[in-house]
Image (cartoon, rainbow, N blue to C red; front, side):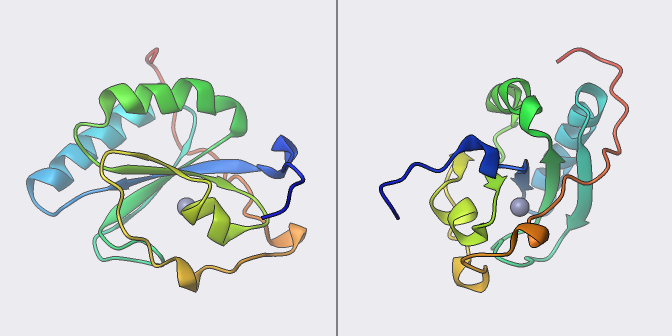
Length: 139
Ligand code: ZN
Protein backbone atom coordinates (compact mmCIF):
# COMPACT_ATOMS: atom_id res chain seq x y z
CA UNK A 1 0.00 0.00 0.00
CA UNK A 2 1.35 3.39 -1.00
CA UNK A 3 -0.20 6.83 -0.70
CA UNK A 4 -0.16 7.20 -4.47
CA UNK A 5 -3.51 6.26 -6.02
CA UNK A 6 -3.51 3.47 -8.58
CA UNK A 7 -4.68 4.79 -11.97
CA UNK A 8 -7.67 3.14 -13.61
CA UNK A 9 -5.50 2.41 -16.63
CA UNK A 10 -3.91 -0.41 -14.59
CA UNK A 11 -7.10 -2.47 -15.06
CA UNK A 12 -6.88 -4.41 -18.33
CA UNK A 13 -10.06 -6.50 -17.88
CA UNK A 14 -12.26 -8.08 -15.22
CA UNK A 15 -13.27 -11.55 -14.17
CA UNK A 16 -16.51 -12.63 -12.56
CA UNK A 17 -16.15 -16.04 -10.92
CA UNK A 18 -19.49 -17.78 -10.50
CA UNK A 19 -19.32 -20.26 -7.60
CA UNK A 20 -21.69 -23.18 -7.17
CA UNK A 21 -22.37 -26.36 -5.21
CA UNK A 22 -22.97 -29.60 -7.09
CA UNK A 23 -26.53 -30.64 -7.90
CA UNK A 24 -29.19 -27.93 -7.87
CA UNK A 25 -26.62 -25.16 -7.45
CA UNK A 26 -24.84 -26.30 -10.59
CA UNK A 27 -28.13 -26.20 -12.47
CA UNK A 28 -28.66 -22.59 -11.39
CA UNK A 29 -25.09 -21.79 -12.46
CA UNK A 30 -25.80 -23.34 -15.87
CA UNK A 31 -28.97 -21.26 -16.26
CA UNK A 32 -27.09 -18.10 -15.25
CA UNK A 33 -24.38 -18.94 -17.79
CA UNK A 34 -27.02 -19.16 -20.53
CA UNK A 35 -28.56 -15.84 -19.52
CA UNK A 36 -25.13 -14.17 -19.58
CA UNK A 37 -24.29 -15.59 -23.00
CA UNK A 38 -27.59 -14.38 -24.43
CA UNK A 39 -27.03 -10.82 -23.18
CA UNK A 40 -23.33 -9.90 -22.98
CA UNK A 41 -20.22 -10.05 -25.13
CA UNK A 42 -17.88 -11.93 -22.80
CA UNK A 43 -15.69 -15.01 -22.53
CA UNK A 44 -17.40 -17.87 -20.71
CA UNK A 45 -14.64 -20.02 -19.25
CA UNK A 46 -14.49 -23.76 -18.59
CA UNK A 47 -16.49 -25.44 -15.87
CA UNK A 48 -14.32 -26.29 -12.86
CA UNK A 49 -16.19 -28.92 -10.86
CA UNK A 50 -13.21 -29.22 -8.51
CA UNK A 51 -11.58 -26.27 -6.72
CA UNK A 52 -8.83 -24.73 -8.85
CA UNK A 53 -6.14 -22.13 -8.09
CA UNK A 54 -7.18 -19.75 -5.30
CA UNK A 55 -10.85 -20.71 -5.64
CA UNK A 56 -12.09 -22.89 -2.74
CA UNK A 57 -15.21 -24.33 -4.41
CA UNK A 58 -16.37 -25.23 -7.95
CA UNK A 59 -16.82 -22.30 -10.34
CA UNK A 60 -16.58 -20.99 -13.84
CA UNK A 61 -15.07 -17.71 -14.92
CA UNK A 62 -16.56 -14.94 -17.03
CA UNK A 63 -13.87 -12.63 -18.51
CA UNK A 64 -15.10 -9.24 -19.68
CA UNK A 65 -13.88 -5.90 -20.96
CA UNK A 66 -13.50 -2.79 -18.80
CA UNK A 67 -16.30 -0.95 -20.61
CA UNK A 68 -18.81 -3.73 -19.91
CA UNK A 69 -18.53 -3.36 -16.12
CA UNK A 70 -21.28 -0.70 -15.62
CA UNK A 71 -23.88 -2.88 -17.36
CA UNK A 72 -22.79 -6.41 -16.53
CA UNK A 73 -22.04 -6.08 -12.81
CA UNK A 74 -25.38 -4.39 -11.92
CA UNK A 75 -27.14 -7.05 -14.00
CA UNK A 76 -25.34 -9.75 -11.95
CA UNK A 77 -26.44 -7.98 -8.75
CA UNK A 78 -30.05 -8.45 -9.83
CA UNK A 79 -29.75 -11.89 -11.41
CA UNK A 80 -27.08 -13.98 -9.65
CA UNK A 81 -29.72 -16.57 -8.60
CA UNK A 82 -28.44 -16.76 -5.05
CA UNK A 83 -24.98 -17.82 -6.23
CA UNK A 84 -21.82 -16.27 -4.82
CA UNK A 85 -19.89 -14.18 -7.36
CA UNK A 86 -16.37 -12.74 -7.08
CA UNK A 87 -15.67 -9.79 -9.38
CA UNK A 88 -12.01 -8.80 -9.58
CA UNK A 89 -9.90 -6.53 -11.78
CA UNK A 90 -6.86 -7.82 -13.68
CA UNK A 91 -3.77 -5.69 -13.08
CA UNK A 92 -0.05 -6.29 -12.45
CA UNK A 93 -0.92 -7.24 -8.83
CA UNK A 94 -2.88 -10.53 -8.91
CA UNK A 95 -2.91 -11.03 -5.13
CA UNK A 96 -4.38 -7.58 -4.49
CA UNK A 97 -6.78 -8.06 -7.41
CA UNK A 98 -8.32 -11.05 -5.66
CA UNK A 99 -7.91 -10.26 -1.96
CA UNK A 100 -8.03 -6.48 -1.47
CA UNK A 101 -9.53 -5.02 -4.62
CA UNK A 102 -12.31 -7.46 -5.40
CA UNK A 103 -16.01 -7.21 -4.76
CA UNK A 104 -18.29 -10.02 -3.71
CA UNK A 105 -21.93 -10.60 -4.49
CA UNK A 106 -23.27 -12.92 -1.80
CA UNK A 107 -21.21 -14.50 0.96
CA UNK A 108 -17.45 -13.99 0.80
CA UNK A 109 -15.47 -17.23 0.39
CA UNK A 110 -11.96 -17.78 1.79
CA UNK A 111 -9.60 -17.62 -1.20
CA UNK A 112 -6.17 -19.29 -1.15
CA UNK A 113 -4.54 -15.97 -1.93
CA UNK A 114 -1.03 -17.00 -0.92
CA UNK A 115 -0.66 -19.00 -4.14
CA UNK A 116 -1.15 -15.84 -6.23
CA UNK A 117 1.88 -13.76 -7.19
CA UNK A 118 2.08 -10.34 -5.53
CA UNK A 119 3.30 -8.71 -8.73
CA UNK A 120 3.72 -9.75 -12.38
CA UNK A 121 5.42 -8.01 -15.30
CA UNK A 122 3.25 -5.86 -17.56
CA UNK A 123 3.70 -8.49 -20.29
CA UNK A 124 2.19 -11.13 -17.98
CA UNK A 125 -0.99 -9.23 -17.12
CA UNK A 126 -3.86 -11.33 -18.27
CA UNK A 127 -5.14 -10.28 -21.69
CA UNK A 128 -8.86 -10.18 -22.31
CA UNK A 129 -9.55 -13.48 -24.08
CA UNK A 130 -11.57 -13.52 -27.28
CA UNK A 131 -15.31 -13.34 -26.45
CA UNK A 132 -17.23 -16.55 -27.16
CA UNK A 133 -20.78 -15.33 -26.73
CA UNK A 134 -23.21 -14.00 -29.33
CA UNK A 135 -25.84 -11.99 -27.47
CA UNK A 136 -29.31 -11.75 -28.96
CA UNK A 137 -31.17 -10.17 -26.03
CA UNK A 138 -30.97 -6.82 -24.23
CA UNK A 139 -29.92 -7.06 -20.56
ZN1 ZN B 1 -10.06 -14.51 -12.01
